[in-house]
Length: 182
Image 1 (cartoon, helix red, strand yellow):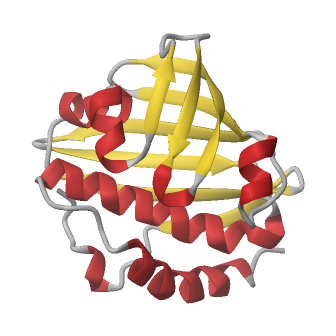
Image 2 (cartoon, one colour; image 1 turned 90 degrees about the horizontal axis):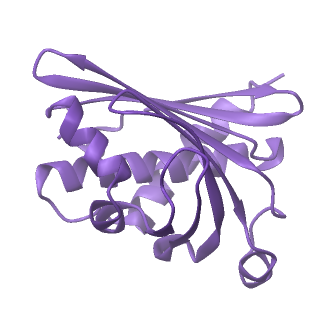
């Protein structure tokens, strides 16, 4: 569980640009050990409870299919770095079929980099998501915060957050952050 509830109005992320695309950086502390948090990030049985369904080879260099039901997103990915239980980096790409069904950005390579570090009986998680289009960066910030809040709910044994309500609450502050990207 994180040190604060999603309803506290706290924004976990920051936004910036790099190489013409967006970067969302989120940071939170979880009241669990690093091994447990690593398991929640890498075990397909646990991933489906808070993020999405992952099928395939989850070892370094492996490829996988990913389905995020809450977002209607389907695509593929590969494991670029895997250093248990401290660092995971994957690159994902939405399928053209999934993109045509949704209303999001055209498919792009999205790099998701997660770093975990123990802080006593808690774990610091820093996630950087690189690649989103700059004109959509606020929406990716809000969406990724919802994913992190769902992870916190999973760790704490609670139900997922109300995504629609959280989306409505989070988009305006992330739009304000996006307005300052130069």
